[in-house]
Length: 187
Image 1 (cartoon, helix red, strand yellow):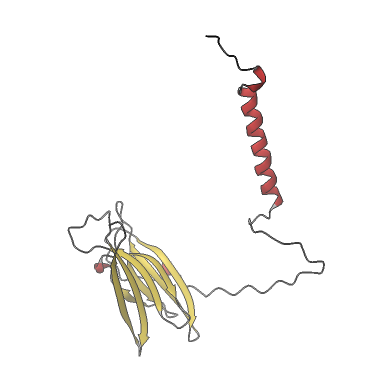
Image 2 (tube, helix red, strand yellow; image 1 turned 135 degrees about the vertical axis):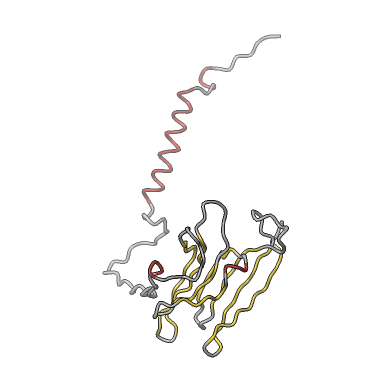
């Protein structure tokens, strides 16, 4: 049997791979340089002066560092994990999910509503053992949230098995909470 040799120009070596890498870098660099810094695809620029639409003014937020949230954390500080703000009936409101900042693990969240007066109202106590993953104030004035929790004390704390849809609506001067629980997919 005769040995078959591959011609030198058909073998890949260091020089070949350096040229391939340089070519890829040039293509990627050219593509990045050709688009805007935001990565948005833009059409041709208008010939006249562009008129910028006024940006919507963000809702004023309560300074949560100055608010004493009703959590008993002992020596640990309070950590705000989520917050959202809106103006309802002409008054600024901030809704925040907060927990005690422990050295290990993820402590449960409480959800608090902070109005213009700075006094927090507890919408969801941390004693319910939920970790809040989403919060929003809707245009109708209701507050929506999503959280994860546990169906029993036997469920390992690293693997929540419940998904909880939360909703708060104003009725009179109080807030009414509704929740829907479902099993976490794959739990």
